[in-house]
Image (cartoon, rainbow, N blue to C red; front, side):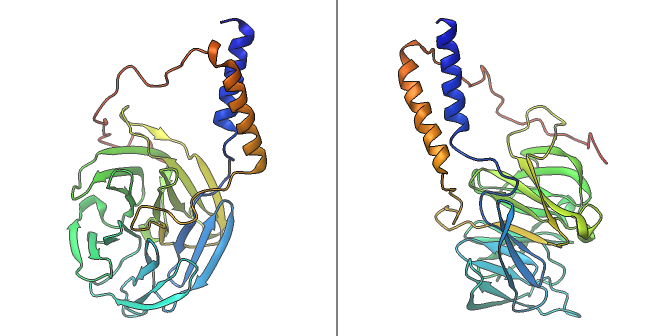
Length: 310
C-alpha cells in the first residue's frame, strides 16, 4: 500500500465514523426529571417540555410508554397521591397511593416492575406501584438508581461518594464499578441517576453545593477491567437553578425509547455518502483493520475502596 492510498483509507474511515452524527452537550434522548412538583424534559441542550404535577411530592419517576410518578411519602407536609401522565405531560386519569412510607426519591422501571430507593434501601413494586417489597439495603440506601436495559441490571449512585456501580438483578454485589472525577452529591444525600438506552450512557444530576449551579453529567458504562478507574464526564449540561430528585429516560415495554433516534442533518448525510464513495474507490487497496483486542477479560476488577475523592 503506497502512502497516498494509506491516507485515503484513513480519511475515508474518519469521514464514515465522524460524519454520521453530531456532538451535543445534553442527552440525545428526552430525559425526564422531577422536582416533586414539576416534571422537566431535557434533550440536547434545551428544556423541551415542562409541566406541573397534580400533587405535591411526586418525586419518583418510572417512565416507559407513560410517566408514572410515586409520592415521596412525607405525609405531614405532602400528598401521598401520585399520578400517571402521557409522555407530553397530559394526565391519563390513573393515580397511585404511597403505602410504603417515607422517604422515596429516585426511581426507575424495567417495564414490568418499578423500583425506588429510600433510607431503607431498594424497593420493587408492580408497574402500578402496588405490592412494595424491599430487595436489599445497606450501601444502596438513599442511592440513585437506573435500570440498564442492555444487560438487565441496575446502576446505583451511592450518596456522597464518587462511585457509580452496576449490579445484576437481585444482587447487591458489584458486576461493574468506576469512580467519577468529582464527588457525586445531591440534595439531602439523594442522587438522580438515569440510563439512556439510545447510547448506553449514564446521566447524573449534580447540584455542586448550590442550586444555582446545578448540572447533568454523562458517563460511559464501558466495563471496568482496570481496577480503580476514575472517569471524567463525557458531557456536562448546566441546568441552572433547578432541583431534581429523580431522573429517567423513557423505556417502552418493547425496548424502544421514544424520540431517541436523532434525525441526521443534511451535511452529515452528504459526508456519509462521500465517505462511502471513497471507501468503494479504495477498497481493493485498503487492508482490513481489526479494532478487537487480542484478549478480553470476562470479569471486571471491582475496586474495594475509593481511590479518589474531592
